[in-house]
Image (cartoon, rainbow, N blue to C red; front, side, top):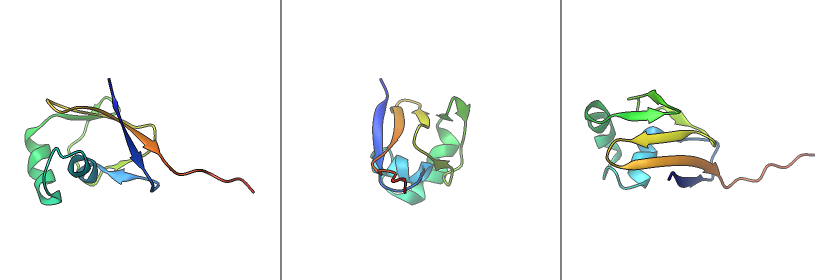
Amino acid sequence: MKKPVQIDTPFITLGQLLKEEAIISSGGQAKWFLRETKVLVNDEPDDRRGRKLYPGDTIEVADNGSFFIRSNRTETTD
């Protein structure tokens, strides 16, 4: 089951996601973690810590679980 990750901004980076989900302890570890660990973004391998993740994206981190990006923002139409 995918764990929802709520964001208040238009996007979150892959490095931020790893830190917020306590997979890594600091943003500086993201580069090394992504070199050694298989990460899929929308079923495609990705190792860029700056990869922008938007609501609706799914992320699978080997040995750490699956995540689904959701937005807390409410869109207003005028």
